[in-house]
Image (cartoon, rainbow, N blue to C red; front, side):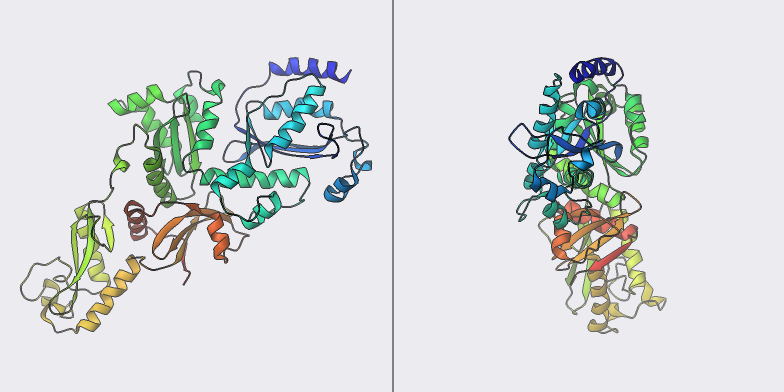
Length: 475
């Protein structure tokens, strides 16, 4: 009787459902017992669009069979608690509704998917969803951890978890874990696969619909073809505004993008520094066909130093040369020259020794009594070089360990960039309630990135121009 009623309910539901979400992240508690004879005692599902929870459902379920004693001890759910709970056929319609058009995500997804499929089979309904397992994703994206059980994994990553072994607590922790895994998926296999497996989303999408669903926040966006292939990666402080520019521009490149794009996914970064770093890294990794600028080096000039015959440290702007060691880099010569004027004044340096005043004798600043006389050897090499080294130490991260802290994606979140031994290691996000005073915890939060000259240029250029919330030295 329950199966007949359920079938009628599903027929009416099929006309109402529209596909508008990506992931159904869930956790199921069961009675235990023989394989394929388990019953569901509790279920929690969070519908997640890759950025935020957009719908949720949780309920105790009367399994119509006794719970194994060891399960009662583990979950705290007993037979008496479930006596008046709804039976599975009574919540089945809601489960279909909240999971429709989604990829099912769970920690040990094979188990949860098997349990759900078995329950729906008993009702005569074919329940079929693509699945993603956060155990397998974690092993791939966060290798070499001692344990991948949900409790130990989220603790090692600093993810809060409440009501362990209860469906709602475990599912909520899995949402946070999955959000972190999406960040660590630099090659974008997860989102590309999701786009490819959702043909309902690919049928001649309107550019206006893509714009309407885009956020006005800072982040990186990915344009996809119908098969999921990424054809363009960009970053913006306002993704919606930037997409409008793409879709209204009539140049040759924009017109080709408008013809090819069927879907746009995005990742919020909270601040422009991480957006720039992600864009640079992911263009190099994914090599989208419509990206050209960041496939090559993004800086043209660099600042080098040398010691002259008198023992003074000289600073010199020169053409970028990856074979040579540099203090910092610049997009163009004008940017470099402006910076040199600024630091010459800030650190009381000599215009002759910074290359701003060509002279065989005293520099211009010495003549107006604003230079201490290094250009004519009146100031000692030790005093002058101390100030130059102060500048170099401030602008070069060589051999330094530090955390760069800035705004996160939400008001209760912060971003962190890890620099170790002068090398850029990657970025991550953490909750304000979580103390990042353990280096191993910080490393587990970090999405690894490549320490190339472009990343160093982005870091140097950004920190020269903008202020971050704070920089924490680790040594």
